[in-house]
Every structure is written in structure tokens, then in C-alpha cells.
Image 1 (cartoon, one colour):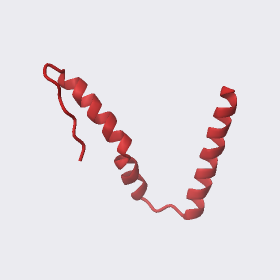
Image 2 (cartoon, helix red, strand yellow):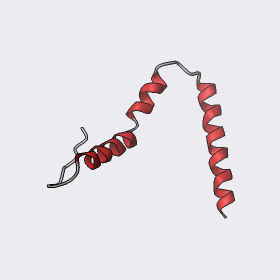
Image 3 (tube, one colour):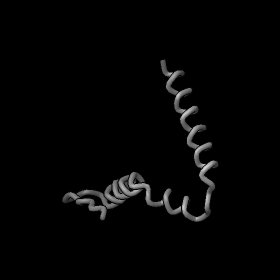
Image 4 (cartoon, helix red, strand yellow):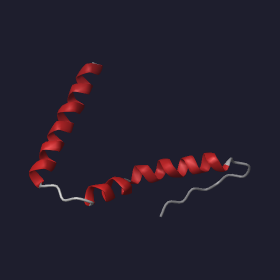
Length: 63
């Protein structure tokens, strides 16, 4: 359960923004979307490899 302590005098929009950020980090929505349709293990592996290649290229560009 996500708990966001609201400080005295804090704007409710700011607290809501903190809640949304914390909720997004949990990955619940991402997991729900992933479970909507079955993806074959081979497709998942291929996507993982593509992501790893992309990240590696981005890191090389930084150096």
C-alpha cells in the first residue's frame, strides 16, 4: 500500500503528483498491460535483447 504523508500547508496537487510518481515506480500498470495478452517467451526474449542493445548504444554515446 502506498502512503503519502501530506505536510501541513502542502498543496494537494503536489501531494497527488508525488503519489502518481510513486505509483508509477511500482510497475502495477505496466504489469497489468503485459497480462492483457499472452506473449510467447521467444518474443519476450527478443524484446529483452533489443532493449539491452538499445541501452548499450545509449551508454556508448555518452562516453
